[in-house]
Image (cartoon, rainbow, N blue to C red):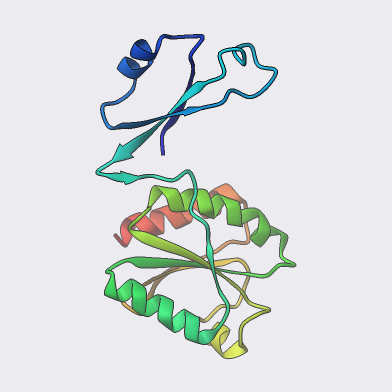
Length: 173
């Protein structure tokens, strides 16, 4: 989501609206205290819409906690003709924890066409981990039509992992 914050003290309301794209949602919000324009009391926040769908800044990775839930996620994605990105992680894994918020931001780029999930391998049955062929953490997989379409094993720098995941998602569109 493209968000612009404009202080009323900087521009008049009509000038601010003229600078924004035609498909914008304009919200007024209180200015933070102790800012130069806090006397004015309001700031304009505009969020741009694409095709009637507001793009979020990030998409939360929904947790999968059981094999039944995993099956339901794959079935829902198959019925809605969407892909599912699943990060297989562990809470003790520093790279997994570091990568998660970056994947949430990446999810915003592909919203609403791909759903993003995470699985803590310490909280699900071993049979699910074996079924997904996960051997290392973090592992990011793309699932479509109930089948694994791609995989990135993220043992290296986060920006490289994100580039690989982005490439995987664009190729498999």
